[in-house]
Length: 179
Ligand code: AMP
Image 1 (cartoon, rainbow, N blue to C red):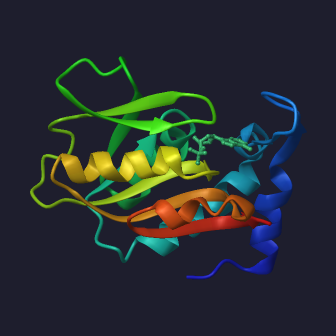
Image 2 (cartoon, rainbow, N blue to C red):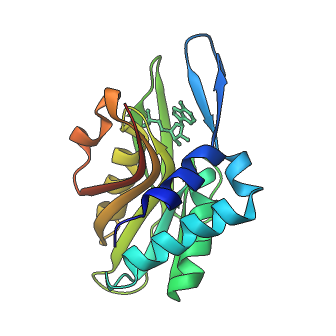
């Protein structure tokens, strides 16, 4: 299901650019102005529901923290479960973890070892934005490590100039592309 030009504009215009945040040279894509705009938020979620209702998904896995917002609403629309992929040290039960590189150093994400109780679960990974792809790639690895299948990784925004999708070991879908 493709997004109409009008709907794409509604979503795109609702996202605010914040130059030099969190540091000089970065244009931060602020989705809080999408979240507080009911028309844009609903247009986005309606589109994602349309796209994914035929995918036969079992779970949505959202990345800490903005992936939780979009992922949990979409999971409810699709009547499936939601699984949080969290930054290190937040999950209380036994976890599996994956390190990934940042510009300087490393970060780590984790998921519960029994996060996807259904056997051979079909999972959609979701986050707000893909930049270098490091975070999403770690998320895809985690889903596989605990025995599920990541059928697609979905983003509201993709920074095309960083080509982060090249390292993602699954299909990639982004609603808005920034070149
Ligand atoms: P990366 O691992 O480089 O693909 O970075 C993706 C993660 O960092 C996502 O969780 C995004 O929310 C966040 N992020 C990276 N760059 C930006 C940006 N320009 N604006 C907003 N969020 C960003």
